Amino acid sequence: MGEAKRTGVVLSGYGPVGRAYVEHLARHGDGLARLHGVRPVVGAVRAGSGQWLPADDGQPVPPRAAWSAPEPLETTLDRTGASVFVQALPSSPELRPLAAQEAVTALRRGVHVVTATKSHLLTHWTDLAAAARAGRSMIRISGATGAALPAGDLSRTGLRGMGCRTIRACPGGTVTFVLDRLAEGDSLDDAVREARRRGIAEADPSADLSGADAATKVRLLAALAWGWDPATVRVRAEAVDAGTAAAALDAAARSRRLRAVAGASLDRPLLVDVRLEETGPGDPLYALDGPEKAVVFGCPEAGDVTVSGGRSSPLGAALAMVKDTVGVTADRTGFH
Image 1: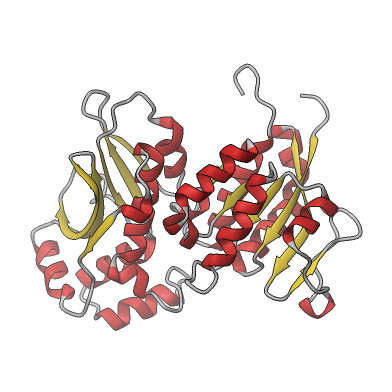
Image 2: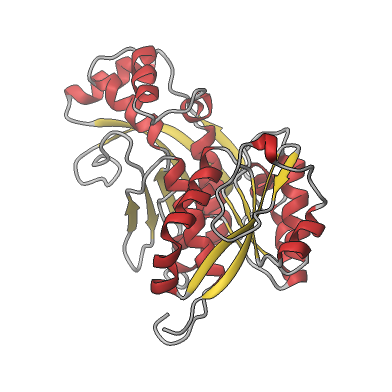
């Protein structure tokens, strides 16, 4: 492999995922260059009311008090010459307009977008696709579809021509961990507390327990696989609550496991269901242990394709963004 290509990156969002992304590039840039011929270099970090542009490659990010006032994104992209815009903003309703606006701006300017932010993908999918076509750029969303679980790649390209007709998933580790603890006799409060203590659950796990997070991820997977617009997808979700403990215990008594399963099917267009479902031996979702996650793609002629594993953590999401950053910029010939 020849000399590595320097890839300029502008990062938006500097919470746990954004920090993990920057730190991984700083530690493993040489390895990425050696293995993939690409050396992603952070040219700017933007967050809240400030931004920081390093004077030299590899300079550590200083405390936010040392950051300057933010410039328009167009100015930052021009100053840095970035070819990738990476989003690690929280997936909140308040930040959705900003995430959408900045992603569209970058894509229209021919800058690839890599995002772990989900909110604007659900509401602005068609706008983002149109902007990417106009700018002849790419958008990759692995970090939004299961952190380090490469389900997004399978949905987008890995199953082309394979006749995938259904998606059945436990795409978040928190709820699976909680259900397994309920099956062992824990109360819901105790199970959630333990999930937080282990760093599995967020401070507010309501999106996981309500089924909203699983539904979001399957809406995005279905959009990649079948071209659905996530904004038009209906969701029916069954929540995990205090009354779920009895069902988890009853399933365990019969050597079965209760799972929160998010599903979509071409036979039920534009609908995602999240149901509490008993699973048995032989089912890939039954085999999940604690915070593990999995997606089963139903391909009647080719046979089911299952992807499981992948760390559910800020580092896991950051690694998904690193993978996508390399993917949109690496030169591909031959087996690459």
